[in-house]
Image (cartoon, rainbow, N blue to C red; front, side, top):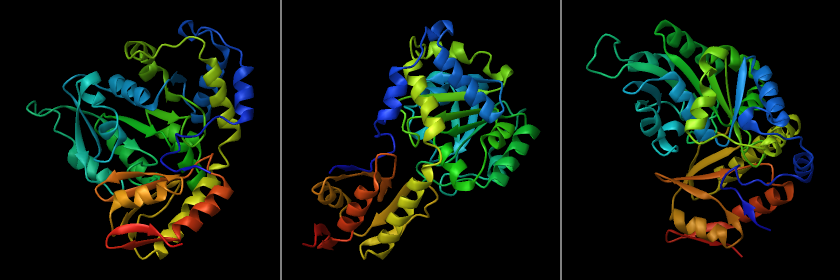
Amino acid sequence: MKIDLRSDTVTKPTPEMLSTMLNAEVGDDVYKEDPSVNALETKVAKMFGKDKALFFPSGSMANQAAIKLHTQPGEQLITDKYAHVYNYEGGGVSFNSGVSCKLLDGHRGMVTATQVIGAINPPDFYHSPLTSLVCIENTTNKGGGACYDFEEIKKIKQVCEEHKLGYHLDGARLWNALIAKKESAKQYGDVFDTISVCLSKGLGAPIGSILIGDDKIMENAIRVRKILGGGMRQVGYLAAAGLYAIDNHMDRLADDHKKAKEIGDVLEKLSFVKHVEPIDTNIVIFTIDGDEEDFISTMKSKDIYFYGMGQGKLRFVTHLDYTQNMHEYFLEVLNTVTFINNKAAHIQ
């Protein structure tokens, strides 16, 4: 029994999702003639109370398109030092948009309105880049699936309005935040200018993200997507998976969160674990007193797979394909690990 806790992107479509995909009605989406894509975009735009939504092959492309829509070359965006748009999108901020990042030292990937105010360059001081955009991430990836306090999100919005800044949400795992905090998509649509959401993480679709916004900001989104190579043809087979995921896999995210917390409870009791980050959703980040690579290798010998994040951090991510049977076996194995002379081993 292989247990893969590297990410929630490792899931496979369920039989029901595959059936929906095979029976999807499709057309040429470059001509905007794919009924399944059109239905997905309409559904998600309505969920968030926005005018338009556009289907993208990846979350990185959706984020990069949003940044392009909000900025001009030579300008600067404000984001947290852990942000996905800075750390995990191949330097696309500078390559695609000619924009630099001012990084904030937030808490678990989350920044405050006060920090944003302090990071805005004076608009009449032409020696520094013009600040034009604020990007935040909810939930935070490197922050361990942390969820923002919505009141702080609204305070940052007020700062953006006062300083005429765009406001983009990298909501790759926003679905997890909505379930964990009992919030609505419409709340977020009321605050952000643009939002990207991912279908291939917690919701278990094989591919796809969606960029959402109102008519004015989204006017050139399809052109930017084309420039980035994101024009697709009969992509309705994938959009159908997204529709199925939204309709059927949202509420079950609570199960992933519950399993993550139970993993955290076990980790807290293990003598070699130094620290476990607070667990809000489906990501468990922790540090150990011992050789990390040896720990990873030792768990791999039991068919359990996960990653080190660097800087002494290790990560487990629960997801749709991580079953209750797997969970019970994993906790059992975890309880057998011990460290001798900095090396991990299983107690037989």
